[in-house]
Length: 235
Image (tube, rainbow, N blue to C red; front, side):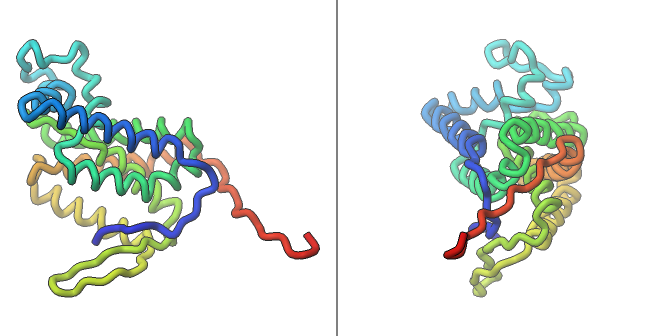
């Protein structure tokens, strides 16, 4: 299943959602422009490596960050390839604008960063000895998905569905679409045995999703703006 759009209106301009998409895209173009070797150096220097973060291993001096903990944040803005970037940014656009709309701009960016930290913590705890850099916005975006399922369970998601030769589109309630998504992350996380199965940080997705739900109770979403009413001929 792949989401095409959600049928969930917004009542404010999602400036930070757009800004995050632009920032991640520009950074990825800088990665790509650095060439294969240069791009790899960027990933190792600014990606989150659990064993390095915990002080169990050390990178060569030219790749070490002054403060390794900063990689918890810098890793959120890096991506491993075009499809990785496009998939994350597509989910961010579809689901992020509604969360920004209901939280407000300031609380939204705080929510995004804290969800990303929760996701990173889950992956580090699941595989503390890993020396594979973790990059991508998917942990923070998973937090957005967690908030979305709680706030808009009945929103309809226009979804592209393919099952072998059966291809169609259908409108699925968010509670089902995101519930299935979370179940898939849990199955893959269990199969990975704590590591990054297939290069995907499954536990980060789970941690981000749960963090997103918890953060809603801390940040207390503002009351949703009502849709503008149409006036009749008498006002």
